[in-house]
Image (cartoon, rainbow, N blue to C red; front, top):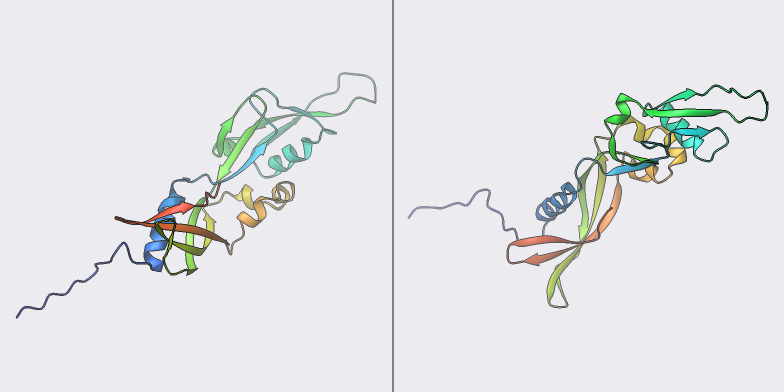
Length: 190
């Protein structure tokens, strides 16, 4: 009698780390490779910022990170009370990370979500007629540009620091079971 072995077959409906990691990563891949974004106070038209403007430290930090170039404007006024101003423009390096730009602002983006590991998950259970499992997993943002981890930039954009933590961060999501296997339900990360 011949012996048949099924090697490498897996059940997409099984509640296991491999299936959950695959489903979650497919969902995260939908965000692309620009998941960490910051908004800069420099746009297509508004590029002149006075040194006493609340936007100036942000533009200066992005200049030190290599995204912007600062040109000090000369003071043609003879009064000492005139406030120094600078014109900020995108550098070639900055242009690589532009996701959106309008007259007054520019969004710089970088990075890609990666599931590092499944920490744990609940046994599948019925919830309002659907089988679900709650999954706790660790996410890291990879392929980050240097500006995203720049200390000066992170000080002014404090939301960056937890997202760029080299250890990653934990997320809880709900997966639902369908006739084709597991699918991502919630939450949306961005």
